Length: 282
Image (cartoon, rainbow, N blue to C red; front, side, top):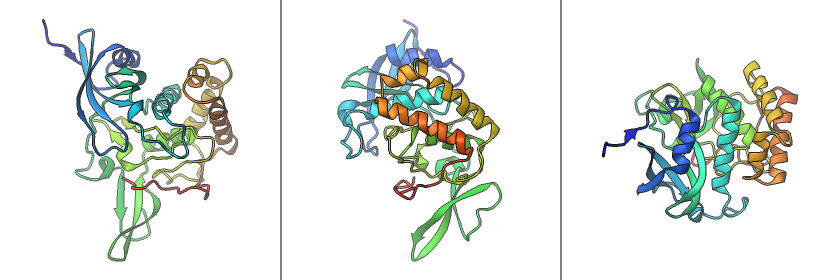
């Protein structure tokens, strides 16, 4: 029997084919990512002579959260992927909800992160700098304590990929955009992962990507949001699929956030009612 074909890097194979592989392929658990707060299993998936690495997060392995319904994080991860696909930006790896070795869970395409600047955090997209000025090509986020009474300025790159991701996070109300959730791939694309704490009805936006807070949205972002608003209308395919994954009030809140972004025309600012920076930040 010939050896299975290894799936090429994301972006080479059509998204629909990746979804079919993840949804219908045979899952084999090869290890566990122990640093994760919930059960995260590294797997291979094989279907039709093609194999790929993936992540499997079974619902049974989710730790209860005080502000999210139990057993709902996997569905939120899939919902975040669907919204990302609707933007056309492709910021979330292919993600499906399916049965697996430990029951129903989220299965997501594994992304090999490429270091863009040596060992710098998040592939050189984040940095700590001395002084109070971010410097050219960087956006300031907040002052951070670095030990011995010293502080440094946390900054992120003034990068179009990050700016798109900040808009997606505002739409899905991402409560945990850490540096470790930013994966620059070898082909130049940027992916965001870990979207379990999203789609809450209250403002939970907590992110390291505050550098554009209060600034006007790009023309591209406004056009994408207008398209997204149409795709979230009652009866539209995206709205129908999201209704199977999140509650009706959460779906209404998504529509409200998109409408607010279009109305204000600016990137959101911290509300002051919720910690604006995730901890730990990386």
